[in-house]
Image (cartoon, rainbow, N blue to C red; front, side):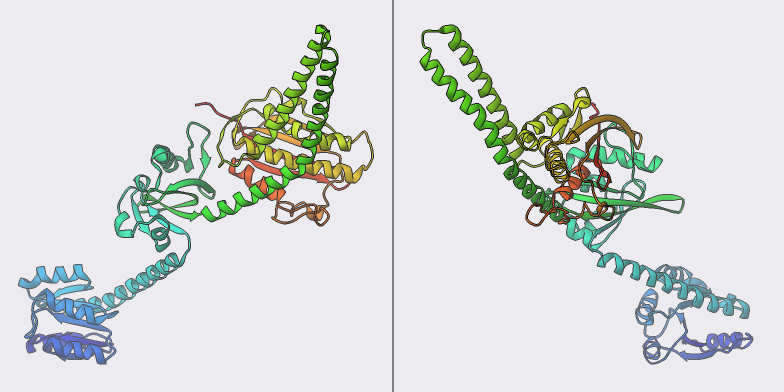
Length: 502
C-alpha cells in the first residue's frame, strides 16, 4: 500500500513511520514537507491514501485540504492535526476527508484501522457515485420526464426531458410543490386531493367517484408548462421508502403528437363514414321531397276543398319534419369540434344513428332492434365521437350480414342491448351490438384493433375504423372488445362509465 504523507515536522514523520512499522501490513510511505511537492507526487504516482497535515510551509488551514482534494480524485484523504487545529480538521471531513486523527493520540492500531477503513469507505462512496452517475445518465438520456417527489409533493429530482417538456430547469423546481407548478389551475385541487389519497391508500381519486388504482397503471391527464400552455400527458407512478418516508417517482410522457395523429385518423374515418352514408341520406330525402311535390300539386288542383288541402298540408309538414331530422342528424355527426364530454342519453344517440343507417339497412333488408336501451341512465362522453363508434360497428355488421346472406334472410338483423355492470367497483353501461353475420376468423380476432388491418376487399375498407373506435372508447375511460365465432356471429361489447352527478 502506497501512502503519501504530507507533513513538515520531522518528529511527526518519524513517529508516523514507527507506528506503521508495528503494523502487520506492507506500507510504502512517501513523505514530502510542502504542499506543492505533494501535489506533484499525486500527479505522477498511484497513491492509495493521502495523510495530510493542514499547516504546511506553503499552505495553511482548510485551503490546504481543498487543493489536495481537488487533485486527489478517487484517493482518500485522512487529516492529522494538533489539538488547536481540530475544528479545521472537522471542517475538512465535512468537505470530503475520510477521517481525522489528533497527533498525540495516534497509536499503531488506530492508525492502521483508520487507513484501512478510509480506503474502504472511499471505495464504497465511489461506487455510490458511479451508481448515481449511471442513474443520472440513464434518466437524462430518457425521452420521458422523470420526476421524484417526497410525501409533501416537493420535487427532489427532475431530469433533462422534464426540463424540455415543462420548460423549468431543475434549479427552478427543486424543493417546490409539484401540483402548483404542473397542474392547470382548474385541476390543482383535484391533483392535491388525488395525491393525498394516493399516499394513504395507493389509489388516486377523481372528483367523488370510486378511487382508481395508480401504482402499476398508466393514467392520462392534462398538465401545464411554464408558459401556461397545456398538453395531454401519460403518467405512471411508483413508490419507494427512504428513511421510513414515502417517495414517489413519476414518469411523464407528452402525448400531444399522438393525440393529433389520432384526431387525424378519427377525422378521416368520419369523413369516410359521411361519404358512405351520403348516398343513403340522399335517397331518404328524395322520397319525402317527391311526396311534398305531389301534395303541393294536389293542393293547387283542389283549391276549393279546405278539408282535403288541410290534410295535404299536414302531410307536407310531417315529411318536412322528417327531412329536417335526417339533415340535423347528418350535420350533428359531421361537426368537427374538439372532444367535449357531457351527460348523454344512450337512447338519443342510438336514435340518431338509426336515422343515419336507415337507407343501407332497408336496401340490405336488415332489421335493427334496440328496445332494451331506452330507459338507461346517462353516460359522460362526446356525442359525436361515440356516434362515430356506433355507426362504424353497425356498418361492419351490415357488411358481415350481406356477405353471409346476399338475399333476404330471417337472420339478417342487428340487435343492440344495454345492461348495467360493475367494472372495478364502478357502475358502467354495457352496450352490445350483436349480429349473425360471417364472424371473424380466430387468427384475426386479436388483429382487428391494429391500424390499417382489414378483412374487407381492397378499396372497401381503410383498416382505421376499429382502431379509431378503440382510441375513442379508451379516451372515454371505457373498454371495447369483441366476441366472435367464425361463420356464426359477432358481438362488439362497449363498457362506458355511467355519468355520476356531483
